[in-house]
Length: 138
Image 1 (tube, rainbow, N blue to C red):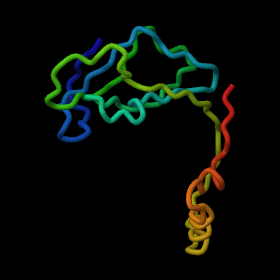
Image 2: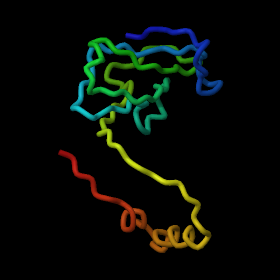
Image 3: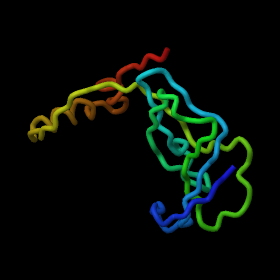
Image 4: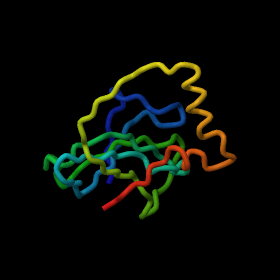
């Protein structure tokens, strides 16, 4: 189900999209464990779709969401037709919220060279060999 909203408060992606924000209405909710959230975004690597879903983070552990939720999207100008059943409307990526500290510092030219050379010295697979950390999903 689609609901149309006025675009007066929200700019479109570019001129190839209609200047009206719409929303996917879903009749289910996302509930996750304590201290976790979800990123709702356009389906990854689906540039062929006639729409683009806006991205946003939702704290899905609070029980705030009801069984009717909306995800905003923009449709491409000139699209006419029906979006087939089974077409992914958005992607939901859960993650754990954690407190963290960070610092921002400027690298010297030598530090930049060393970091870049560390993975560029390989013909292929440098990122995986030098930086990739294996993920564990439970």
